[in-house]
Length: 94
Image (cartoon, rainbow, N blue to C red):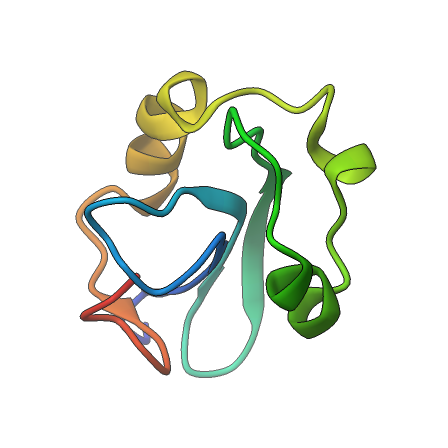
């Protein structure tokens, strides 16, 4: 049996982790051969999304207005990840 990993990707309102907020979270649980499960949710950042980020991500205020805040998703995401190592293209930031 191949080890299980989780690929994680976040979209945010900017690149400053002390002031910017998550607007989308996506994660894929996989082994070396196949996708096992997917976690995906828009996230309401509690503020407007800057135009630069809208241009970059295509995510608008309308997309997140009815989405839950990250605090409501945190435990579900942690449960999804479990003990699996997290991999990604910018894991230190994510």
